[in-house]
Image 1: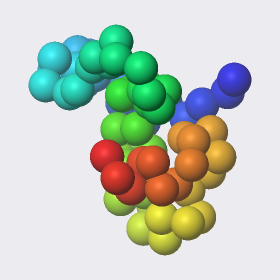
Image 2: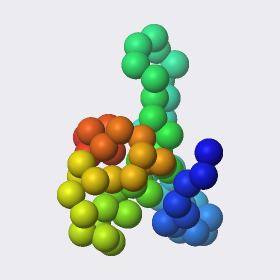
Image 3: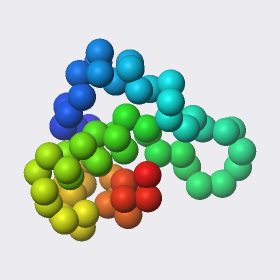
Length: 66
């Protein structure tokens, strides 16, 4: 799957440890933290509405909740 690269690997390594991780409990599938953060960054850099977020970031509602 193609995705936008909003953060460098160095930037990501600075914040990765502060984000939630999968708990292993049954239930809804855990969203990829990096994809969610990059979707948030993309939205704020471009100034688009949440509903216009490109599909590569997943459902806009999930990114918005993060």
